[in-house]
Length: 108
Length: 116
Image: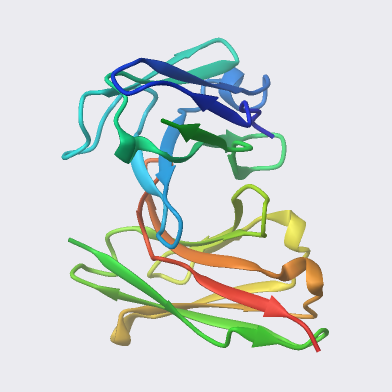
C-alpha cells in the first residue's frame, strides 16, 4: 500500500533519501509515518516514529519528514553499517490495518 | 528493556494449523499491544493482528478469520494460530509490541515453511 523505491545507493559520507508514497486513506489522512531498519536474521529496528522523532540511541544521521501523501527518510554521513532494508509504516483507514512500505535496500 | 522471542515449528503441512508463541522478558505484558507481523520471502512486511493483555484483539481482514491471537499473562506470553495454511503462508513470522502506532520492539523472527 505504501510505495518505496526498490533500492538506493551512495558512497560513504554521502546523503541518501528514501521516499514513501501513500494515499488519502493513510499518509494523506494524517496518520503518522514510522521508519524501520531491517538487517538479515534480526527483527526490524524502529528508526523514526511519529514522522520526525528518533528513539533514544538512534543517531541523528537519520531524519524523517512528511508532506501531503508522502514521507521521506534521509540518511546523512552514510556509513557501511547503514547497508540494510528500510521500511516505512503507517495506518490505513480504508481497511483499518497497519500497512508497511514495499521496502528499500540501501547499498553503501 | 523488553525482549521478545518467537517459538514454534519451522515446518507445517498444508491445510494444518500454524501455531507460534512469543515470550516476553524484561517488561510488563501491559506495556504494549502485542502483534504478529510476517514477511513472505522477497515480499514486504504484513500485519496480521494484535492483542492486549485484556484479551482485546484486532485482525487484518486479509486473514479472513483464519488467525486467532491469545494471551497468557501469567506466563508473559502471547500466541498466534493460523488455520488452513497453504504455501502462501510460508514466511518469517515476527512478534512485536506497538505503542502510538509504531512497532517499538520486535522479536528476531522465526521462519515457517508450509510444505508436505
